[in-house]
Length: 123
Image (tube, rainbow, N blue to C red; front, side, top):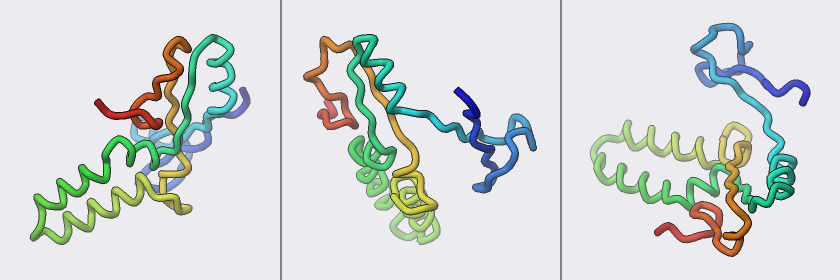
C-alpha cells in the first residue's frame, strides 16, 4: 500500500504527523476508485462523491441559512459561518469540498436505491 500517511495537519498547516502526537490530525490518501472496485467484486454497490457535493445535498446550505438567521446582528458569527461553509464545500485550492471524498457502499440487492447524499432522497 505504500506511504498512506500524507502528512499531519495542525492549526491549518501541514506538519510532521509525529510533531505533536495526539494533537495533530492525519491526512491520509485513500484510493477510493480501487476501494470501490474491491467492494464491487464483493457484491457491494458503491457511490463516491466530493465532500462539498455530499454536504450540500445533505442540506448543509440550508443549515447555514438557519444559523445565519439566528445571528442577524452578529457580523462576526455570520463571517465565521460563511468562511466555514466555503472551506468545507468550496472547490478552490485551499478548500476541502473537492479534495475530500465520501464513499457509501451497501449490498448490491439494493442497487436501484441511491442513498441520501449520492442522488437519493432524504426521507
